[in-house]
Every structure is written in C-alpha cells, then in structure tokens.
Length: 196
Image (cartoon, rainbow, N blue to C red; front, side, top):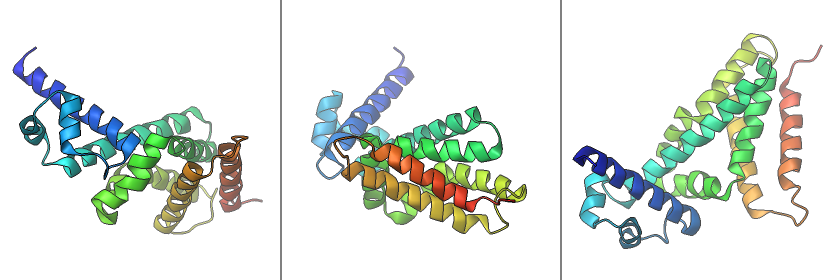
C-alpha cells in the first residue's frame, strides 16, 4: 500500500469506527481514546486527519446526510411524474430516518454537537435541497398552488424530521408506526395538491 493509500485507509477507518461508536453510544459518551484504540491508530494519526472529535463527527454526519439524500433521490427517480417523485422521496426520507443510526447521528446529535446553523447548512446542501427542487417543479407546473418554496420546504422538512424522531421513541409492539407515519405523510402531501 502506498503512503497515500495508507493515509486514506486510516482516514476511512477512523470515520467507520467513529460512525459506529457515535451511532451506538451517542457523541457525548464516546471519547477520543476509544476511537483511536478501536481504529488501531494513534491520537496523532487522528489529529492528522481531523481537528478533533467534533470534526470527525462532522465528517460522519456529512456522510450520513449524503447517504440519506442518495436514498431519497433513488426513490424519487424510480417514481413516475413529478408528484409521484415528491411522494416517493418524502417516504424514503422518513423510512431512512427510522433507522436508529440515522436518528442518532443526523437528527439527535447533529444539531446538538454542531449547533443549529451548521447542522442546517449541511441539511440544506443535501435533503432540503432536493425537497426544494421538487416543490419548485410542482409549484411551477401548477400541481401545488403558487407560493414561496422556502417556507414550504422548511415546514415539510421539519415535519419529516419530527416524524423520524417520534419513530425513534415510539416503537409499538405491532410495529405499525412507520406504516402509520407514511400514511399520514401521504395525506399531508395530498392536502397540498391542487385538485380540479
């Protein structure tokens, strides 16, 4: 392995170990010593790649956000017209948000660790960007009544983030929470649609 490959391998290992630990224990409960021990590297190696634990967490969060955005895009692109793409993308976001790893890293620790503004900027560059683009198309073609895209994007994004957090804390024995949430989301989206 070349020196460049070794550096990249070390960086990827730190990210993978950090991600696993942050997802299972939460940011606060994970120490740098644990990350480097499980990664098999020194603290110096960690500091070569990251400014510290918060910087490693930011990288992990960005990776999780990009993966969720990719799931949303795949689901949307597999659907038919722009309306079906919006519904499929929103459903995919809520389903991804039901994943405990995504909940912990993206929705619980993300805003707490990085602060609301930085967390929001990361979200804006991924999931919120795709949602805004889909809504702009639907407003443009008259499927949704004419209105500013930004507030509608934030309202829907907030509703879906809150639904994902609720799902994290509310698993019923019959496990229908996700299906019920998806159905409620579908009804909410349908209420935005221009009919007639």
